[in-house]
Image (cartoon, rainbow, N blue to C red; front, side, top):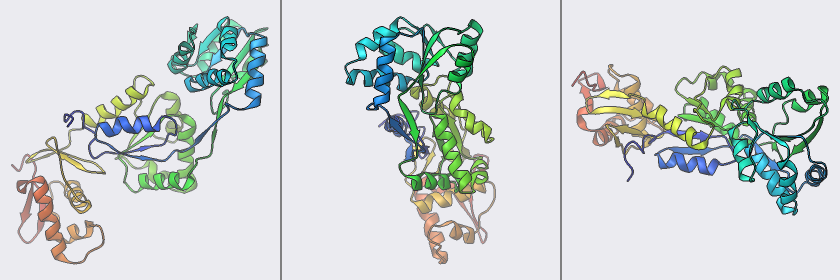
Length: 368
C-alpha cells in the first residue's frame, strides 16, 4: 500500500472534462487515492486523412516557408504523423527545418524537438498575443508564414500577419467538435451544482468554455460558480481564461504539464488542515474521509452523518437532523441510532459524543 502522502487524495471526487489524455490524468489521480468522473466537454476531430491537409503539406514542401508557427504540441505532432502516413514526413521536416521555428509554449517546443528540430523562439506565456507582438515588432512584410492551428483556430494571427504584408498558409490538423455524450456533460454540471464533486479539471480553453456554456444553458451556472467548496483547476493560463471570465479563479500549476497539474492538485489537498477532532485531523471529501491518516470505511449513510456533524462542529445535532441526513428518507428513529453506532465503529467511539436528550456532537481536539 502507498504511503499516506501518496494517498492524500483519498475520498476526493475529481471531474475530468478533457477527452485527450484523460485516461492518463485519471490514472495519476487514482494512484493518489482519488475517485474520478469523466465527462469530455468537447470531442477532438482529427484531420489526419483530410485531403486538404495533405495538399497544404505538399505546398509547404514545394515552397519552404520563412517562418513556421506551432501553436500546440499535439497539433504539430499530428501534422508530422499525417505526413508520415502519406510518406511525406522526411520531406516536410526538411522543408520546415530551414524556416524560423516559433513555438507557442513549451508543449509546442517539445513537439518540434520530437521531430528532430529546434525551436528558434518560444512564447513562454503560451499566448498568441506574445507571438504576434514578437513578429509584428520585427516586421513580417514579404515573409511566407505557415501557422499550424490548434482546435479553436488561429486566434486572429493569420489576419494580423496578412494585414502586415505577409503571405500566410494555415495548417489545420484537428478541430473541436461537440461532446460525444452531451447528457453526460450536463450530468457532470449538475453534479458540481449539487455538491458531489471536490475538484473540476480543465486542460483546454475551448473545453472550459463549452462546459461553462452547458451550465449556462441549463440555467445553473450561478449555482455552479457559487460552490465555494469546489476546487477549480486549469492546466495553464490560456485554459484558465474562460473560467476567469466567468468569475472563477482556478488553481494553475507552475508549468503546463500533466505531471505538474497532478502535483498542484495533490499539494492543494495535502495543505488543507482538516477538522481537529479528538482522534486527529479529519479530512472529509465527497467520496470518503480520512481520520489521522486512516482511510475510514464508511457507507453512504455514515458519510452523510459525518458530514452533518462536521458541518455543525461545536454544536449538538439532533436525532431528527441525523435522520433527515440519511439517504432514503427513513422516518424510523431507530435508523438514526443505528447510523450513529456504525459511524462510531468506523471513526472511534470517542469521536462522537451523545448529549443526553439533545443529540450528538463531534468531539474536537479542544473538547478532548
